[in-house]
Image 1 (tube, rainbow, N blue to C red):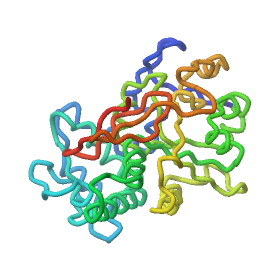
Image 2: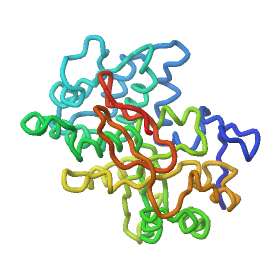
Image 3: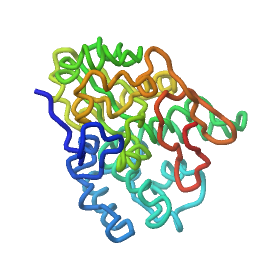
Length: 312
């Protein structure tokens, strides 16, 4: 039986449901730490609390440095990803503009420690490589930023579903294949920019999905968070991570995530579920663009010193 999302909806046709509720389905990976660390009541991130959670979770870089969340005002200087890689310090805006963005970044580290550490290494290595090459971001760094900011993990044990997503065949994925999707696929939030957007979700909100294919004989719910984290991080590498490998995914089309999508006509909206092609470009500063998706993606910023811009 399909689970109906309890996302604060007052009507099945509402365009902007309230995502900021404890049981919003998109926040499932972050839920163990969200309520306890929520900075909104006080207006400040409790860095001491985050660092206790980080120690309890055993967070570290891929080089083995213990990870801590450091006040961005006094964090070591340098490129954001290199500061994390070289010092084990995640610059974090504890109040004001950027606070929620950086809180979701901390939640992503807690939920996906291996995947976040792998993305950090890939981005840091790309920055070093750029310093000896042309002064531009490069394909690897672009793709890593997209996944880190607006990514989800699409885990499934049915190759037909992964193929439908790659082809942007929304009816095969969500309508004709709905029962198969509910039995064989899960979508898990990774990107912290996307997490901030999901506090007030809307129909056109689009993620970029990294597909993790599980063995066909593995029950989909047998992959818990840590197992999926290990599986996802193992697939990310300089030779595999490219924007072209990320599939746009309108999130409120995920079965069970929005009551309105139980009606097949929900997916007839061609502005959101445009079949068979990818529309739009995503800007990553200095005029550089990469392929985007038809629906609106979240802002792509890398950290407190980011030059990333909104999807356009």
